[in-house]
Image (cartoon, rainbow, N blue to C red):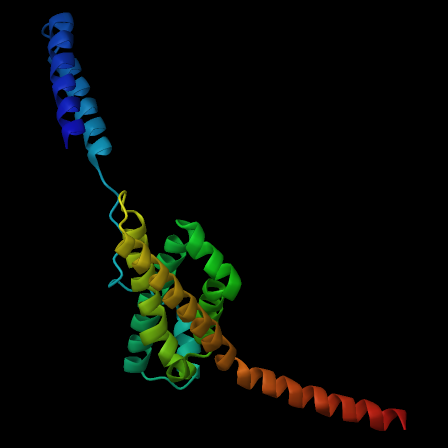
Length: 213
């Protein structure tokens, strides 16, 4: 706001100088004033932040994919709302991790962020499996975001008491456990796919064995 005020003051001064130079050239003055106002407007314009409540547009291909999965219009809407919220939570979680070395080290041990992104992609591919990821979507991921938010807030205190250090240590332990749970969520979600792969491999081995006999 202060920046814009100084721009306007500068514009007024510039207009006064130009007016003395151009005299009665009113058209030239209007052009110059217009250019200055446009410049001030552009400089003062802010890019609106992404609203987590606003859903991105639904492409025809994605809509066809959901309908092919047997989902109703209401189910599609609920699914998209859930996934939109989850995406913003994953983005926030990633931002928190990259801002703190201790959080980054925890994530490296458990790969929780990569597991979160992978699980998100799996849900997009198979939306009807949403209930299988309920713990991740509604408990583990939201809790992880809240925990890392609080951790960063406490850790940023310039003066830390003994109690502050105890809270940081306690938060670290809980975040570590939550990261492990998120990694487990992904493993459990894809377990059926791994079982299917084992069956297919077993059938293929039997077929190869028969062909070699």
